[in-house]
Image 1 (cartoon, rainbow, N blue to C red):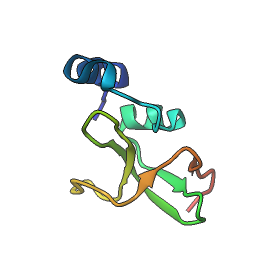
Image 2 (cartoon, rainbow, N blue to C red):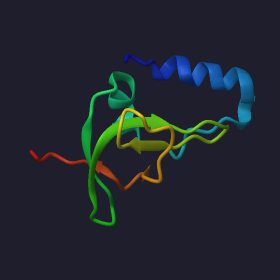
Image 3 (tube, rainbow, N blue to C red):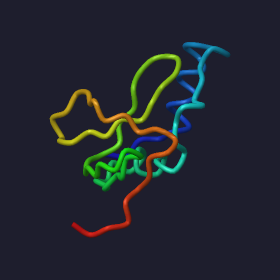
Image 4 (tube, rainbow, N blue to C red):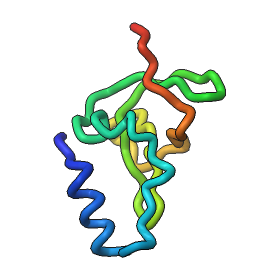
Length: 89
């Protein structure tokens, strides 16, 4: 599942104009959003979870950790302080 972040941004800019705001997106996760690869994320509160990177809709998107292929949403919001965990499970 290959996605293109630049195309996503361009489409949202057409829809929302200058209101579109990517400032809450942690840029470290863009390659994983595009590739659809499963990664391990260490959240700033210490929890570690594995999944793929999704993105919310709307004028101010956020990255989400999608735990399964069947996920259509997630309560795991990836913030600026969260990071890719460099561990083996």
